[in-house]
Image 1: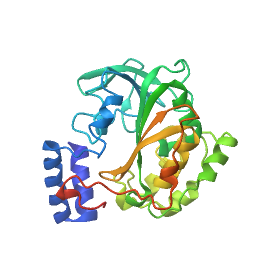
Image 2: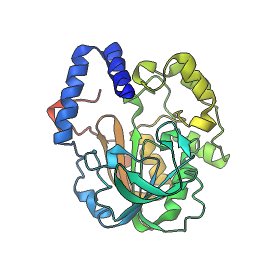
Image 3: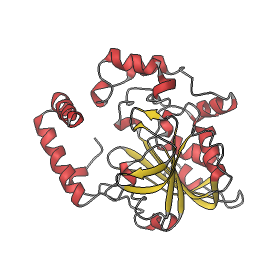
Amino acid sequence: MKAFVNRLAFHLKNRGLSSLFYAVCRTIYEWIRPPRPRCYPRYLDFVKGKEGFEVGGPSAIFSQQGVVPVYPFARRVDNCNFASRTIWEGNIQEDEFRYGRHKLGRQFIREASDLYGIEDQSYDFVISSQMIQHSANPLRVLYEWLRILRDEGHLILIVPHMKMTFDHRRSRTEFEHLIDDFNHGTSEEDLSHLEEILRCHDLTRDRLAGTFEEFKKRSEQNREFRALHQHTFYEKLVIEMVDHVGLQITNIELVVPCYILVIAQKVSSTRLNNSRFFAADFKLEFHAPNFFRAKMN
């Protein structure tokens, strides 16, 4: 209840009463009729009755009422988080992985870039929502996920678009920077982006951050909290990094409220061809599934 009250107060303070009323109406409407991506239900073939692995979470976006439902259709979903306590999930034990009352699979405590003890090609799909932006070395993370993914398996990756988040004032991360991080073995202790984050972070769009001093203190302890967005993501960067690790993009679109959704398949190098996504006339459109979502905000 306290968190709900704080969220209401934050919305009123930063966006006003009319925006709050609009948000409540939208939430009720989308609970009854959840927005779905254009690729729904086609992508369900990749997860229905199959075994998957989630990094981060549990994630409401993968639930029955979520934008990209996965949990209700998979035979099993295992999960990993980086620590036994996080600011999002609270205390976590290496036991059952659950979403609400539903047991989904097994819970692991692992770094996303080091899934030790998990065999190669163990899963039909890997899913992750709003996690990879917290990694200091996204390419190393993706290569590790590729390792546990079976041939012809799929990755479902959801990343916040920088323009629609508290990152909108920051500079765009270039792909060459991700390459450098990978080549230099950048670790999760890295704070090289801290100065820019503190200077450009839009606190009015981050209800969990608190005051600037609270945000600064948490950011300086990022090894423990992992709340920093180490890099800023946009469609071109997502396409470049997924292509670089050797995944065939089958679908990419903007979904509500501010996310890039990419679905990609593990294929042989001879079949890999993402050229149409690099074409000059390729444009990623936002799919507005109802009148409440006429534009990204």
